[in-house]
Length: 206
Image (cartoon, rainbow, N blue to C red; front, side):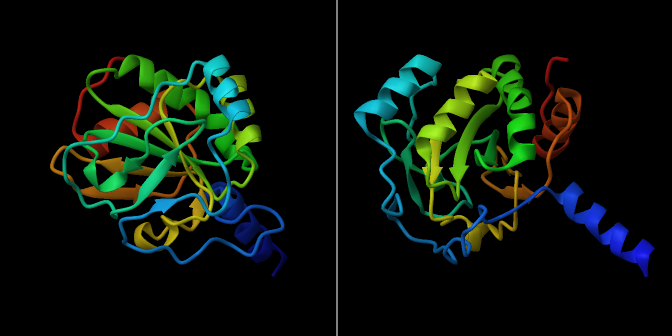
């Protein structure tokens, strides 16, 4: 019995953090609707804009295509144009993270490296997910050197339509608009590179 309990604990740890931040009751069930999600959390203030500029984070860019992501418009973290996820074009990697999630913090530099190395081939977008403290999120962004565009989903609107159960999670948006969601953390850039090449059928530099 003791071995069984230990095995279950290891499985939970490998899967990553819970989809809900500490002390919360979880996000909403989500919905496939055209709406701007902020959850009452202001992600665009003068202070947050200053943090974003200081970190050198790229501007959010609304898409012009169609895909299988839900019609959910998320506000740009730290100010900027909102993004309707259903208009994004692949190939793209969407990283769901939160400042309260330990594995998320550890893997963010790998996504930044992907953003640099795969520029022009694969897009990278970060989603500050189920996080009601955008200032702390931007502090983490600066600490980890992240500069790719970031949007905010403080209520966890993506949880239902994409069946998100853990953070970190990776959403792979393919060139044809199809979507694959993988709940896992990555432990190296080479691991992330292999996943991206496999899921998006692209070739990336080492």
